Image 1: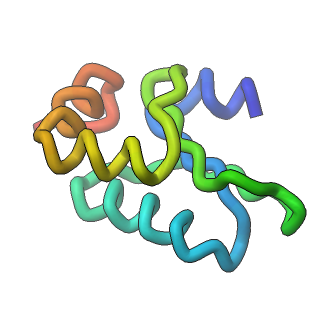
Image 2: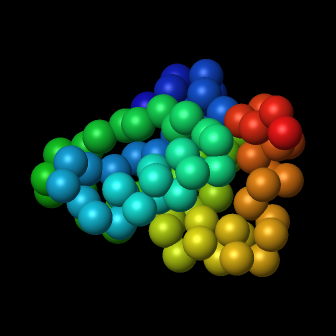
Image 3: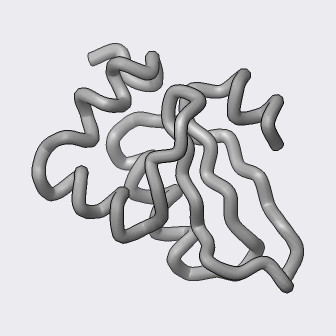
Length: 84
């Protein structure tokens, strides 16, 4: 997973069937980002986790919070995930 985080501007770590993982991916996709996905086993807890620019952004609560405040797009641009 470390390599994936280092090599991709945005990574969503989640698990198959997790509704909040789906919400995180869809939010990013709606903004024009194509996040890399790292799916963990069913026993994984506290997901999704979002990495931007090789650094931990946080979970779904942090992702939504920075989106609402308008901070998310500049963060994504700085990471090279958006070219707008």
